Amino acid sequence: MKTYQQLLLQNRAWVQQKLQEDKDFFNKLANVQKPDFLWIGCSDSRVPANEITGTAPGEVFVHRNIANMVVHSDMNMLSVLDYSVNVLEVNNVIVCGHYGCGGVRAAMGHQQIGLIDNWIRHIKDVYRMHQDELEKIEDMKQREDRFIELNVIEQVYDLGKTSIIQNAWQKRGRPYIHGWVYDIRNGLIKDLNVSMHDDSEMPDVYRFERRK
Ligand code: CO
Image (cartoon, rainbow, N blue to C red):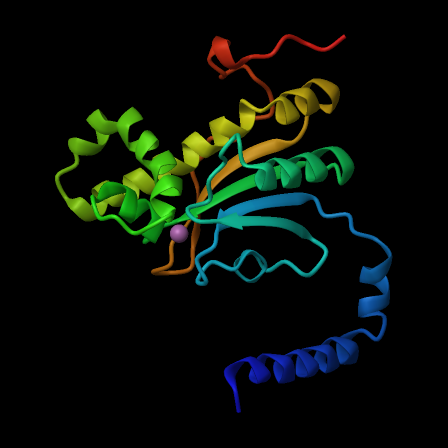
């Protein structure tokens, strides 16, 4: 049997299991979507948002890309952010990176990979911003781990710099934005404690004037 056919069989088995637990499982989900969380994570196959947070279908709106980046010219990310914040009105946006991230590792190196080099460059910019701190760390594994954390923190700030988030903060004091790192070595998520729900920590140049 082809590997993809296996997925379809597993889907049938999953439906059976869900219906056994709750015969209205799909009826309930079909009617409304009201998640409280937007998850911005890495595309890495080892970091599935729902599974590692113990959440069910309907609970988390998800955007994933290589190295969980918030690139402010990325129409895909901006559309997901705008829809989840202004239409679904999520109260929490989580940027979740992960140790062992290949995208971040590539950004520390010099190898040309292909088109992706242009995406990786956004991560290199984060390295340059924190070069002094990072190059004081002599152990390369520890340096990589810290780079992964700093990259998440910068993406949280980048969310706060968007007009989408700043207008929502002004209007309803939400969403909270959070920075987390998942450890693929033990399955645990670490909260980097950079959560914010206003622009008080924002460098002034990024602060938009309040809308009338
Ligand atoms: Co990754």
